[in-house]
Length: 38
Image (cartoon, rainbow, N blue to C red; front, side, top):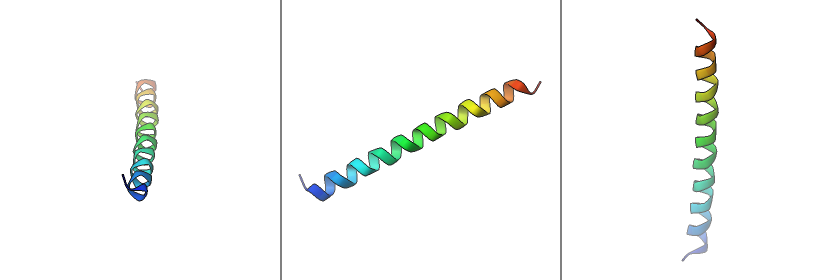
């Protein structure tokens, strides 16, 4: 295993995890906003 490859894979996984969390928060906010407006 190359150390540079492991580092880039870890940073990619971290970025993907952060992006997934942001999408989850945005979808929750969007759902609550749509539920609030009748």
